Image (cartoon, rainbow, N blue to C red; front, side, top):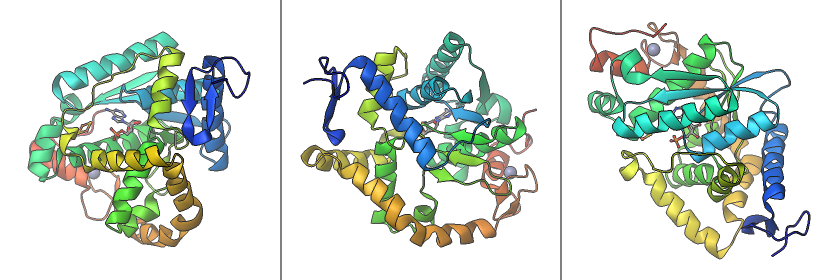
Length: 307
Ligand code: AMP
Ligand code: FES
Ligand code: ZN
């Protein structure tokens, strides 16, 4: 197979685009996919400061690299979730990338800063670990971006992630979630804008990007993710994609272009009922937000925000 762009021998084929690329042209192709996602959905405006949430994995480190290549002002945020050796190692990958690039990485540790880890938070809140983890990450992405004056938070959710979450939300007709599922979640009182610039990039392409760009990333998956039902949805979608390449992209972009607006009012309604948490100020439907409630139960005497 030859490179679609320069006709040199291809090193990777992207079946969805029915194209092969040599190394340089593939890196160029990835930058163009991200540039196009940012432009199409007006994710980041000129001069804005971006906070990239980095886990140490291929998607978020690749995203950070891509945004810097595209000359965005992008700093990193790593959150230590207290998941034993997994967290220690993922932090090392995030730090090594930041120092290699000379980029700023903000490091927030849940156990050190808030007095509990994901296992404890999950136990006291009677939530699955991934749910306690997702709640903590969303809370901290927003509060750190607010405290440090960033305009927008970028996460490394890729096309495979978006397709799996959409699939799950459709199977259960979670209309509120469907209304919020979009590559851009606009800012609102107490909320920074959230963007997913990798929405046009598949998981396999991100692994190839990191390999070809020389980015060293954490390969292991979180040890708590075993029961995560999105893994099952991903496997099901991969079976379908194998038979008809392009199905995942058609599913996700068809939803965004033709269906999302119909569910947006469901999400709006949920946002209208929000008021600041009496403890931390984050928007919530009750007096105290779910993150502070979890912290309060896990560490009854030490309800605090790190300075
Ligand atoms: P996940 O929820 O693990 O699928 O991760 C989705 C996105 O959240 C990643 O692509 C990152 O942008 C971000 N993320 C996940 N874990 C962390 C972490 N420990 N610290 C900062 N950002 C994270
Ligand atoms: Fe959050 Fe695994 S990374 S539970
Ligand atoms: Zn709170």
